[in-house]
Image 1 (tube, rainbow, N blue to C red):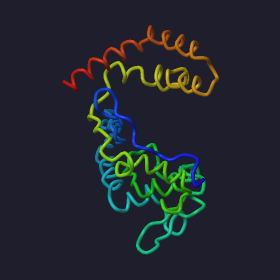
Image 2: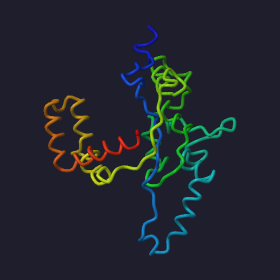
Image 3: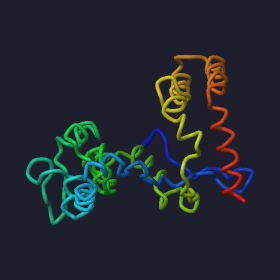
Image 4: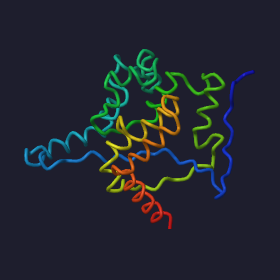
Length: 215
C-alpha cells in the first residue's frame, strides 16, 4: 500500500455543518503598560514595534540572519537544513519567531519548519495526505467556518492560567486521560472539583457569550 491512511472529507453533523473552525490567531496580549509610560518608554516601544513589522524586522523574526540561519535561493529565503531538521525545536532555540515579542510569522517560514525543508510534493503519501486534510483548499474545501473575533470572558481571562492551561488545569487532566495516565472517572472527578474553584463561572460566561454571538 502507498499509505497507512488517507484524509477524507468530514461527515456532516445534525446541524448541517462539519464544525471545522478555521485556524486563525488574534494577538491581544501585547500592550504598553502604565509603568512604561511613567518611565518614558512609550516612544521607544512604538519605534521597536514599527520596526518589528517592517520588511527587515519580519525577515529577522522569521528567517534570522542570512548566511547563518537561512540562504537566499532564487530570490526566496530558505531556512538552512540544520535549522528545520527537527521541525520547530532548533528553530525556536535560535530565537526565531521570538515568543516574548509579537511579530508577523509568515506561513512560508512556518511550513518550512513543518515540512523540515521539503515541499508538499516531497512528502511521503500519508504525511502529504494529512496536510491536504488540514488545508482549506484540500479535501475540506468549503467545510470550514469562520471563527468570530472575540475577546475572552472575564472569568476565562481570570482563570485561564490556573484552571484551564496550567499544570493542574483541565487541559492537563484531559491530556493525562487521553494518554492513559488517569482514568475517565478520575478525569471527571478533577473536572467537577475545578468547577467549584471558578471553572463553572468560565463555563457559564462562555455559554452566555456564545448564545449572544450566535443570535
